[in-house]
Length: 45
Image 1 (tube, rainbow, N blue to C red):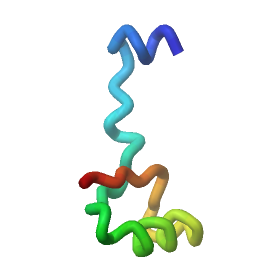
Image 2 (image 1 turned 60 degrees about the horizontal axis):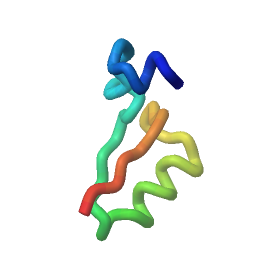
Image 3 (image 1 turned 45 degrees about the vertical axis):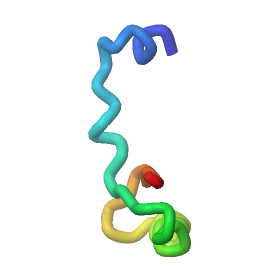
Image 4 (image 1 turned 90 degrees about the horizontal axis):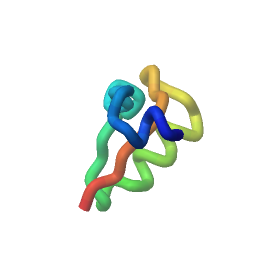
């Protein structure tokens, strides 16, 4: 955690999909069924 907190590791590639808040059901479905190469989703307002 210290390495991540220090900024020495770029974790952005781990977020493979981004969704707006109103698309949250689609995001959860994608992640739950592990489709389209999903690793991690990010929900934004």
